[in-house]
Image (cartoon, rainbow, N blue to C red; front, side):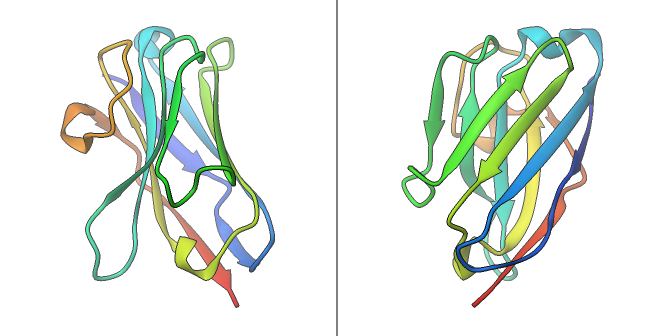
Amino acid sequence: QVRLVESGGGLVQAGGSLRLTCAASGRSFSSSAMGWFRQAPGKEREFVATINWIGLIRRYADSVKGRFTISKDNAKNTVYLQMNSLKPEDTAVYYCAGRISTDITMDPSEYKNWGQGTQVTVSS
């Protein structure tokens, strides 16, 4: 079992930046693909970004492509989400998620481990 703890959320003005951090415990992190998802009030949880086990393959939702960057540091058991040019529509609770597979996927049902979430609020 891998425990995931997100941090780095907060309130930022439109156009600003935030970096989310997801710290993982457990031996399997280095061989796990990871993902970030988000859920806005009244909406379903949606895919944001995913990265494969070694950090060489990434995929992004169209809504964040070119603005967000996912990265993974296996030595630190940490995955990051750098968010630039933030928009009010990026406001949501952001969740880190981990697979027991090395490969990326955008399907949340394929992720076994989830963090508790961190709130990101972008003001206009």
